[in-house]
Image (tube, rainbow, N blue to C red; front, side, top):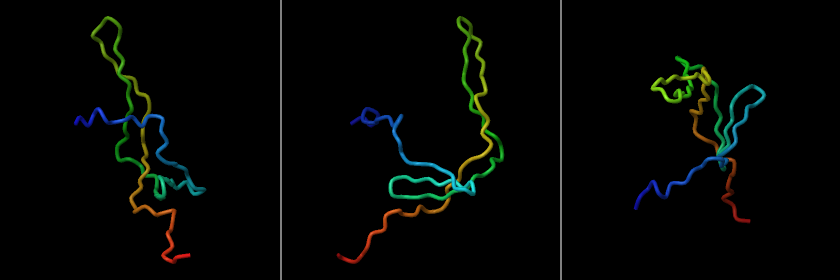
Length: 89
């Protein structure tokens, strides 16, 4: 069985929600789980680049699309939104 044939794209699908509190702390909600995080400065910035190739020539150039200087870090264990009661009703 070929795994690649069964793989479906998640493009355009919503996996969860990401928002910021009033204190600019990131919160990620995925299903029944909540992750609290923080924004961290990167030691070295990352570049997002687009490859450009001129028509009819072998010249290749790269255009910088954006510079990433910070990342969101979710390093603690997730908290459950739904709490199940052990008591029978």
